[in-house]
Image (cartoon, rainbow, N blue to C red):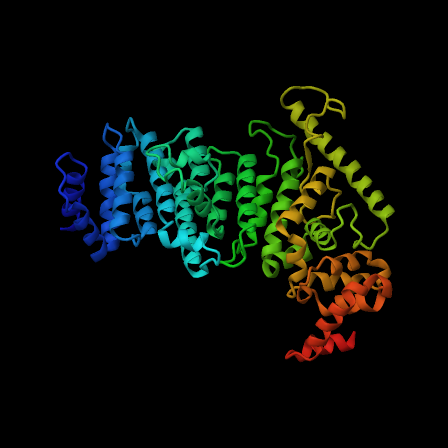
Length: 511
């Protein structure tokens, strides 16, 4: 009985002969049977969207009113799940519908509106008062993150098959549900949120943790051959999402919890070079695994942020299995952005020689590969001057020796380290202890001029550095150099020795 009653009430509310009790009835139904009401409401929305007239504006107003009547306790995740859920009958009627693209855009708009409706008066107060109300913000952020995951799952699983959107519409909707679109795209239908609160609403809805499930779906959309979006765009989207999440205040839920290490393979899959399928290579020739250079280096910086926020899972794997990532981690820890970093113990000449050998072999491999491609298509003779692939490609060997990064990448890394405090996050990790690992590998402080800088720049957070690092600094620095830090350090180590943890006290005394 719920569906006909809800349908009758909503249709009456949208008519010219409105009953003043309509919303009270709708609110009561949502309170008594929230899930069934959300499902019935979604059915009614979809039915209205199939009309020749555009009902988006009316549905936005209705959704806003239902949320108001329920005092902002409407389960918006449940509403979005119901609206986006694949329904056989609806899918059949929309597949060849003349307004199917409009319906696709309307559903995305309603889903985004639900995320903005999560900004209740309590959330507004929690975010704007001088002392942030963390529990309220945490609940809000998880609600928005879950709705976002629901939207990306829909785009990956069924939206393409049901609505067959144009390339532009698919791009627009993917950006929109991730809050990467221009601000006006969220309020242009009816000017809600109003001008005074617009910026706050959009900021709060976009500054939420990035769920692993959301990131995985975005990557799978990029890898898929069916979805009309290329690798470069997906890497750009994930770069924006990860940087945004990594810069969130640390007082709420962890913004970037990732433990599925296959994400690394997905990223390298996205930056790999795939030659045209219609080209036949010589029998027995195995094409090399190549990467598009600019995407390859961008992916390393993205993975570096993930490693900084997940030292135990991602960071540990990066440190032990991926020399390039380890090199970037060491650069951030020591705050030295040159190749090779001061922590790499081999002589610099060795690196130069090795790099030169790698480049020579790589050139030969790419030229041979391009010659085979040309022989099967343009018949152009390929050499270093005529090669189109040499400036764009490099070998895809993520677990191979660390390569010399382009200067632009080192500059970007330095900026990233400053804006996202990656070095601080790596130094703070005790399990695994990256900083201690570097120290034990390097031996005496003569080889660690960066250590003094690290202690000096620790800005009072000495507890974030391993005690061995502080002892080494005290024992090895000339008295004149350390006067300012000397008292601070001694007081901190005294506290540690007299503290409750006997193991750390022993480590200080042992050193």
